[in-house]
Length: 192
Image 1 (cartoon, rainbow, N blue to C red):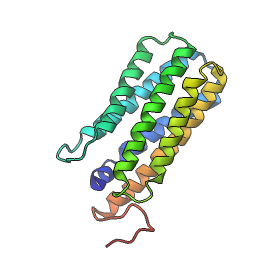
Image 2 (tube, rainbow, N blue to C red; image 1 turned 135 degrees about the horizontal axis):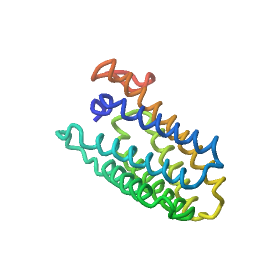
Image 3 (tube, helix red, strand yellow; image 1 turned 30 degrees about the vertical axis):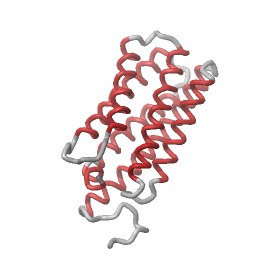
């Protein structure tokens, strides 16, 4: 699994860059119309979901279950497409849809962290990402009328943090790939 992840390091970096771009747009242009925010979110979810599905179905000879990644990808694609088809569905729908996506994505990340805990060191980064994603999802579902400005800022900050985490993971995987199949993912872990 580590070899597969290290060969696909670029997927994490691309996902991270897209998340940061989306986050910066939401933070620095909070006054943009909700329609534009809905379209940006729909496009981001669609692309992010496609990358997750691509990653899940590469190297099928792996006998490890990747249903969590397929689930996250399909959910992202479906929600992204719905937002692009009906962008005027309203602030409440945007908040609830994003909250559901964040909650499901966080749960999928938590499952991944548990499954990968013996294969990669410092899986706590995945766990922290999962907890943050779940908390954002719950907050958006429970407080949907907090205001478009606050929601745009919250979504933007979340996307930037998620993007940074994705890029950091991708770069670590790139280093592992560059150093060879037996390479370690953490400099503190000795190689046997």
